[in-house]
Amino acid sequence: MKIILVTNFGRMLIEMVDTMRNYLQWVIGLTIALIVVLMLLRILADALRLNPFGRLYQYAHQPTNEIIFRMRSSQFYHPLKKSLGFEPSMLMVLVALAILWYVVAGVFNNLFFVLQGIGISLINFSNGSIFTAARYLIGSLLLTIFFFLMALMTIIFVNWIFGMFRRAASWAMERLTPLLRVFEFGGMFAGWSFVILWMALYFATAAVMAIFF
Image (cartoon, rainbow, N blue to C red; front, top):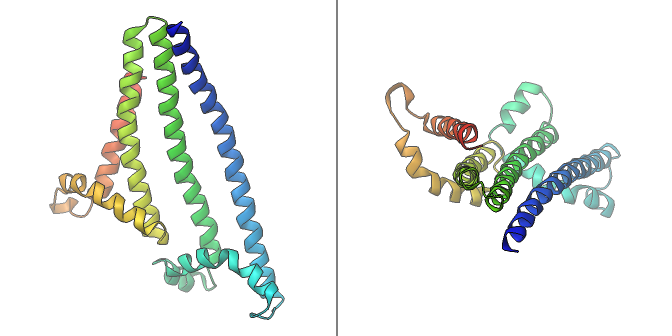
């Protein structure tokens, strides 16, 4: 009875991962469509030269005021404005949205991979394939650690580009600082500890996937 329960739970995890992957794509598409519509309303309000103190103007601008402010506070805003010759904040919003969802989707896909590995491990355990189950379980645990560290690094990267997630980036930097010091080799590699740590985690992840999965 217990073996059947373990098998069913493992299969449930795998089925849940497949369902969550489909929902993630749906949420990404919905978010992109919503932001584009809000940006178009903002552009339309400006093009019609509505009264800045009127309700229609405020309704068109208020939903995107915060994200536009973040873009204009970015260190890339003024260089882009000078290089392109036009107001780049809305362009930056679309780029930020693409990068943000790329990061979020990557984090979720990593989570799905770990959950799927645990599900496969449980199924193999219930079938008596102890060594295969242990291999998948150990690999899943190792990937959880590596994916967590890479998620922290992506939060810092997004904050560096667009000024978003300041508190989360500060917390992430506190967690990563000891590791960054390990990879600060000095000399010609001075200041490259962040990149070197990312490469180390990337190769470690690839090695775990190749050996344990």
